[in-house]
Image (cartoon, rainbow, N blue to C red; front, side):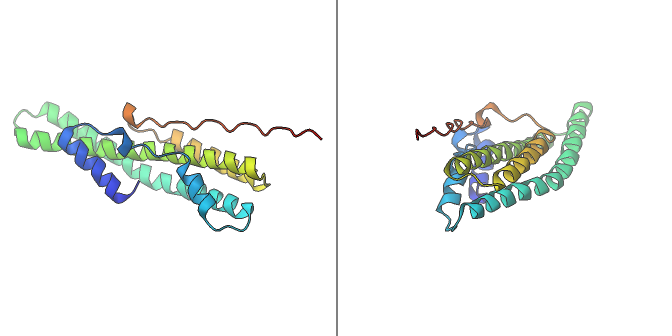
Length: 179
């Protein structure tokens, strides 16, 4: 999702209190199409790019979620303080609730985006394996398993239902050709 798309998500949520599903959903085949359109001379180049992209995502998850854990903890304290303090003005109360909502929305968006990225990577690996299986497929599969574990370990907030990731249809097994 581009920065302008993210701004549209936050803007719409702030104005309407609801979100359009199409602002959250990404076609799982988009990454595969992007990789296929790049000018690689061999399938190995596509596999290596896939592996690099997955590993880069794995590396970036921990720093983001270290901060996200702190933000969630502080937001929980903020909400608890709002419950205890009766003399907080309505404007300050609404502003604090809006900050908590925006933080939760941001974390949910990252969680949903990571799940969508994993789905796109998995779809791409399946397509590459159908087109031309390489020894690199096992390395890509291992990298995808690491990404899946990192995503599962960092589910801090509940992702809204409208942001649920659509899983691609599994690739059909190759048809055996008669000799």
